[in-house]
Image (cartoon, rainbow, N blue to C red):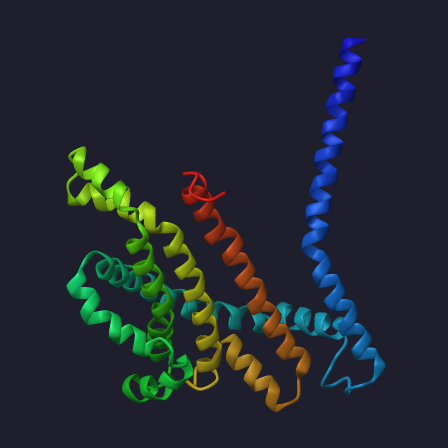
Length: 273
């Protein structure tokens, strides 16, 4: 009797967990279902020509054909390589400059006005300069992505270092921590939530400028080049396929990179609720 009750309770708990998982999945996909239904309604209502506003099945078919032919994966790989290369430059130099500004008053006085002036300027405004200075192709695209994406990383890293509680610093110093240990065990962990936010914002900036500059920099492959080329021939389904791949890559980077880092660090350390 006792065993039957235990088994029944375990089954009920398992069913409850399964139901909770399904509710979580449904909450995540529900907005996409609503948007998809609205898209289909507009597509089949005939408000726009189907060539300009194709139904989702036509977009899915085009995506499948571009994928199995190898065209879409090739464009995606080229874009990812440029994105990660430029973003890596932005992450390294952005965090470094932001931390230096946060720890040094002299560096803050010198660099903060320059960063404050450069950050509000749209990234696309820098594109002609980079193309003139470094020529067309991958090199100028990667440098431009790194330059534009660095601004939010610098700002948030600087803010994070300034936000580290003074009592943490004094406590570490009173326990004999040298500059190296203070930096490793107090400054960086304390500023990490801000740094991760800056990296997320920097990645969003990198996406925006990269897709735009791929249309201008005479690169032979890339999702921006695909979208721009499809526009000239009114291949709206191919344009939407490229946009969908950009969204999927962004979701994967958020879920399997930033979220993993956040869970392993600030969530594990109890720095967020």
